[in-house]
Length: 328
Ligand SMILES: CC(C)(COP(=O)(O)OP(=O)(O)OC[C@H]1O[C@@H](n2cnc3c(N)ncnc32)[C@H](O)[C@@H]1OP(=O)(O)O)[C@@H](O)C(=O)NCCC(=O)NCCS
Image (cartoon, rainbow, N blue to C red; front, side, top):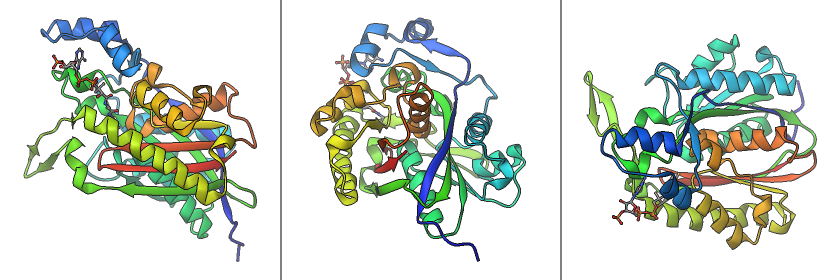
């Protein structure tokens, strides 16, 4: 019998963004043709977003996820056949079923791994990472592929300027392996379903039709306030439980929704903003993909180094939130 190892460790990461870059000016010009007024100045000042990558029609979540997964596996030096657990966090799956994770599995040529999707919107990646960590620590998996992937552009109401300027498409992935050394040091997840209305896409496919509203709707100010409050509380809880001081965190990677949320959070936690990985300016909000994409960017540009402490934090529709503390 193989011995259960006590930790799950990140051994590789990868990211993939659709090649089409749409700047704020591009978007403002496009919306102007439909008498919808916005500007680079408004978007930059309120959100910090300067551009986003958008998938061309037909480019699916599973396609983005597969490319990010391939890059993460290559980075980890892991063959697809070695993976025994695949979790995709997404709110924009290709199909009602099968899960996007099963589609990725087929694309990678893996057979037999457990594969399923996690639906926790912009908290999806921390939910998926925590789930995989639990599988590995329980001895139910040894090598997990965790992906956050979205084509959020497909659920945006492009006539609603208060939401359509905020989001982008993309995918990020990590490979987790059972290890004797830490690893994921701590995690905590929460939800409050009574707040579902502040951020939702309350539609469904039933009886051959879309029922309800197929587009994302948001009360921006309510989400902003909630996000800052729960991320602050969650960062304190997860570090306290792991016996780590906030001042020891080398890199804070919150969900990339809005630069003002990131800077406000850093200030509340007394973490220098230089220690916050920021990609929202380049990627906009890619929902479940935002944290693994930011993580991969900071690993590849050499900011995140072995031995360092990284705090990842998700927040989003549900309302959901959570944190994962990682020793690299
Ligand atoms: C969405 C958000 C940027 C809006 O910023 P805000 O400062 O709260 O702005 P408001 O919604 O109060 O809107 C202010 C004005 O800007 C206008 N406006 C909204 N979107 C606009 C746009 N894209 N361009 C120009 N004007 C816009 C509004 O119509 C409003 O005009 P009015 O005062 O004439 O009514 C901000 O609330 C936010 O970032 N919230 C968090 C969203 C988030 O992170 N969601 C994802 C979480 S997972």
